Image 1: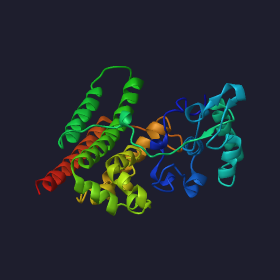
Image 2: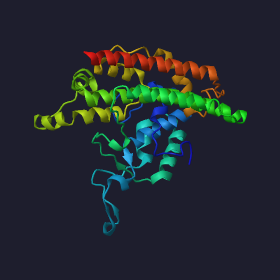
Image 3: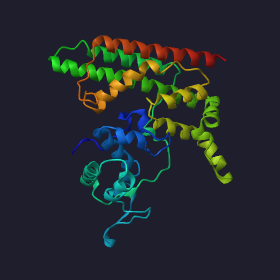
Image 4: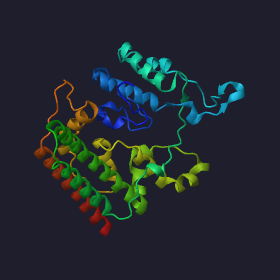
Length: 311
């Protein structure tokens, strides 16, 4: 395979915030960002755009051996060689589009099915949080385990790699804390559910038929958790309003994590190099400082939600 040997794993979390044209699903890439992005990011964005819309027909399409193959009852088949140039020809170099088309052909051929979107909450990939203090406890534990890696012995290049992985894991711990915190309050506080659906545009502006209003009301929590499940949790511009309006708190600033997020992007998505190809350096002191900042942020969110709960 080429740039991504794990095409079943979404690479969206590795794209910067400016890559997203909107908060809605499926993923839509911002063309202004895409035009100037480096080739690796362009490949990833095009691949994720396609995989957000099309899948292996075996996943969605009935098969009839007597008729000679799949029955594309939901439309199709769709060929990456048609869909990608149609969407990106005016934005990305044609040779790069052809590379992505080739990778997708290698994956499932030239006949793909459309993904049917029910926006359901998948419990298998969800999180369960029974106590309001659990997200913070988990965060502290995760940060502690990450820092323990710094004490391991080994070759210098192995220790260098370990530092980069630990640095990335600190941001991941923050993302998990935010997700788990929101899931707890959605599950345990109807006021939070009401706040989310009435104050966040992604829910407030949805239109539903009168006949489905009772079904929609019964599914509200799972609808919100489906949204949380698919949220890119380092999209601070999306997460901050979720905390502000959903939990009715004034969240701490995400600004201290902006540079760290950029470095984490280079570590995860550019194999530890900057856009210019310069190796990323991470020190133990940087990791401990980031870990301390994440811990302080989480403790403040915990304090604010605890005060809220007291009322």
